Length: 380
Ligand code: SAH
Image (cartoon, rainbow, N blue to C red; front, top):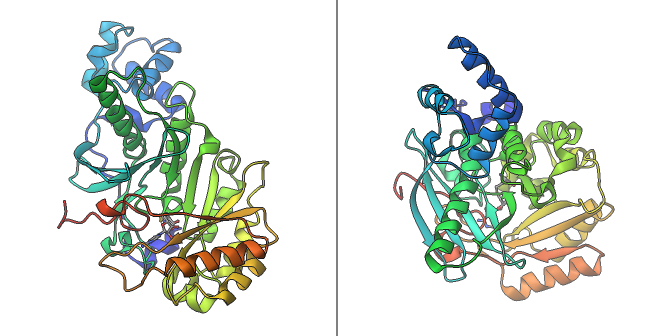
């Protein structure tokens, strides 16, 4: 993965200043941190269940301060107050689309801005599209985030806090309207800003936290990590137990290397054959299909021949294909194909036995649709 960084810009480290942010630690690391911190202060290490209690306050109840952790001894709360941090992202704005999609504009402690999108789904809950990096090191020509360049990876706590901020928002709404239950986030997709497999460790830990039964308790099978095709990272994913927990989506977006080289320059390093060979190494579970995303760009990758080549490439795999008509923005020269063209592309794919789904744009009026997340200093 270092190779990718070299393609674009040097890696900028996650800021590590001040006290330990407790929401950055998984359950085991939290217990170890407690023991080490208590010992360093000359105190007896706390009992084992203290870490469980604390974990629940951090990730389930989303406690704002240590004082509210009512079942922790006062002396422990006091020590936590001087040694640890509960810092959160700051919500700059919540934009609401006419279709009900919402975009949270969030800010990190070092002043960087990121976006996270909350999309109402058919299960009367929400699918949240989270960001994994600020900007992106890849240079996909159709994606607005690419225009930012790569600023830095998000820390684990900055990834999970996007979900917690959205949960807080839904809770506030329920409180205001008197609804008995807040809206529920049922699905999380790593399809916001950034390349999640480029920030592998943080993303993996975020998944562990989000799926922990004493945390947000999301179902792993309702979490999807989307990658542009970082082959070594996909191979790592294939060997990792993470692959048995969450779904993988691959942004294929072309059926020839010539076109993919143009629209996704990562293809010049790992071409379609190398990418598909890596994807084939991911263990196939029942109900866990690989998803291929295919952004339809008018007159670039939307021909009848493309449908035939697509079937030849992935037709033998247990997979589904999400067709995403291009969402226009100022940073890309492409056009969205006509709806007749989109329908023909879909129909031809179906005729060839492919499982294709149309991803209609959600939240495009607030710049929240796929590929439109590019909050810049200008906007921020
Ligand atoms: N870096 C990851 C995840 C972020 S992009 C990846 O590449 O998969 C999420 C999806 O949005 C990708 O499938 C990408 O191809 C798609 N996308 C990017 N720009 C788009 C645009 N302008 N219109 C429609 N989809 C776009």
